[in-house]
Image (cartoon, rainbow, N blue to C red):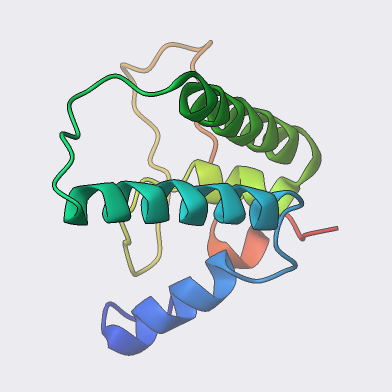
Length: 123
């Protein structure tokens, strides 16, 4: 990242959103829009949102959650760029990092990391 300004944040956004969208996202978005639309209309009609879901709504919710979990797992397994996105904690640090040896560090301990320039390329 060039710096910690708004420009640097935009650069981070461009890198994290680069590439084609994942498959099934349109289907999940349609399910979400339908569910939110139904909940919104029921809320505006004054219905109690605490009542149990109908069988069909519960089935749709279960399908959506299963599809989302399958999509996430498939993306982690097949898309190196998505794996890089998934491990991003939200912390942005600018500057140059240099590992320093520690005489108290155990031999079997290793440190792994990457900088934006060395991140795996999307395929």
